[in-house]
Each structure stands twice: as structure tokens, then as C-alpha cells.
Image (cartoon, rainbow, N blue to C red; front, side, top):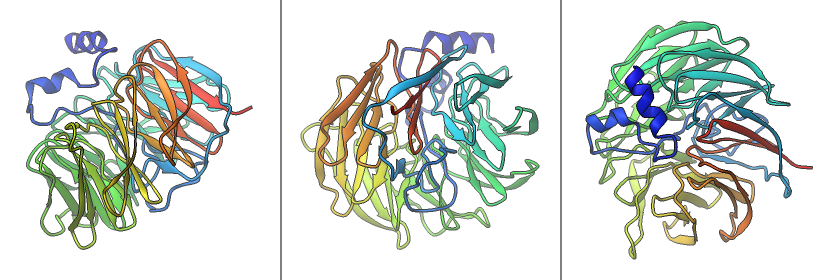
Length: 392
């Protein structure tokens, strides 16, 4: 573990690809910053941001635009780099660093409330539901902690690294692992309920819609699973390449980017492909998840491109080129798109046409996405600094 921690420290300013995975399957090497879920379809009005992608459908979207003039309200510096999205619940903000520490911060001023340290690392974000935080680590362990004081309520183990956040469905917790399995545990006790087996690693978070959960796999398939039984619902849907992106859902449509440069849209109810988007001028590569709101899906590629795609036709509406790539998944907040990039620029774009509206720059880089509430934005960087932005 000491060697592993040394390796993790050495890559704080590099691509978000866990070194342990390099000795495993090379077919699915994906950036992190994945998504999570709890019930509901419509974009949220984000009083809280309990999950890394904001809602049950992993839409990465909220209806509310943030104030025009944002300023840093507070900063908190963790002991190590943070490569996961903060989550916000009630009066607390939760983050986890790459060296195994979970932090609870006061939402108002950023003061540390508690911390819980493990001899591991966290590349998956925490989630919060019913006053309980759930998080998985690089060794395949799943922890449930009391949100109030960080005391451990239960612990379970999988057989592979956990790269994506957990999901909450009713009384159960869903956790996907690089051992190729989706685990369902009781939220109150950690007792196993069922296990679903895919054909290869799973590096995304499960998405929930109705009584179904969705997984994009390194086996180049979109899996649709019955949440009550843990069994596949019909055949898997072909993705033409491996993915670690969490499916984003709006209504009947699920959008999944893949590493090989395609973005797929499926009608998940009738299990038909609606469209497939590709850049015909230059092949793209996708390692993050889409954000969906209204008629648009917004994706970020490893070639520095932010593309807005018509959700009905699959045609590109606009493109914005970053100075450097963004490993983080974009977030739509009202009329804006928020993209934290690896060069340390937090960029605010117009959802209408992709024009740049505002930029905040740091020394260092951003690996994971933002959390957005009605009037706040939270983001963490690879120097371990958590920032809260508010309007005047």
C-alpha cells in the first residue's frame, strides 16, 4: 500500500487514470469523475447536490442559473489531491482525497467538521442519502458512514477497484466494480441482495430510471438491469467500443459517450438506437459523461472539444474548444455549461451557443466536475483545495 500511495502522489498533475489499472485490461482506460443516481427524471432545482451527477438520471443538470458575478466564498485545503466531485447535503459538504481520507466540511464557511481516514485511496465520489454517506475505494471496499460524525456503519468488499460512485435505490445501495459486477447491498446493514455479472470491467456509476439501472461497460455494451431481481432486461445494447461513462437519461432517451469517439442515444424503453454522433473531421475520444437538459446533450472530449448535440437528431449545434482537455464531465446549470479543465481553468459557457462567459483560473488542475446548488458552486482541484463560489 505504501508503494501504491507513492504512485498516486506522483500523478497528481497527470491524467486521471489509476496506475493499478494499467496492469489490468488495457481496453478500457478511462478518466474518472463518474456519475450517480437517485429517483427522478426532470432536472433538479439543486438545493443540495447529493450525488456527483446531481440526480437519479445522472443528467448532470439543474434548472437554476447561478449569479453572474461569482466570487470565492471560502477555501479548504485537504491533505492530498482530490479527483472527485464534492457532494452537498444539508449543512455539510463531503469530499474524498486520493490517499483515503473522507472530509465533512461546514457548508457555510468550509470549516472541517470531521474526517475519516483509511489505508487506501478514493477515486470514486461519495454519495449521501438518509443521513448516510456511501463510498467505494481503489481496493474494492464499500463503506457506509454516518453523515453526522463519520462513524462507520458497515463495510463490504468487492473483487475489483471501484471507480464510479454508488447509487441509491429505495432501501438498497448499488455499487459497480472493475471485477465486472454490479453489487446490490441493503443500505441499512450492507447485507448482499443480488449481484449482476457483466463481461468486462465496469468503471461507471449505475444510473437509475424507474425500476431499471443502466451500466456502460468495458465490454462495449449498455446493460439494462431490473432493480428488483438483478437480472438483465432483454439483450444488451451495442456501443461499438468500451466506455466508462455513466449513461445520462432524460425521459425515454439514454446518452452514452464511448472511448472510440462516438456518442450514442438510445430509446431505453423500446431498446432502439436513436442516433450516433461522430466527428467526421477529427476522431474524438470520450472519457466523461454527458450532461442533458431540454433539447441538448453536452459532451467533453479528450481533444479539448465541448460539443452540444441536438437530443432529437444527433446533429452538432455548437462547439467550444478549450485550451486544454477536460477530464471532468460537464454540468448544465440553467442557461450555462460549467467545465473544469486540466489546465486549472473553470469555464462558464453559454448553453445557447457555447460562447465563453466567465473564467476562473488556479495553479494546478481540475480532474472532477462541479457541484451546483441554487446559488453556490463547489469544486475541488488536484492540489486538494475545495472552493465554494457564491454571488454577491
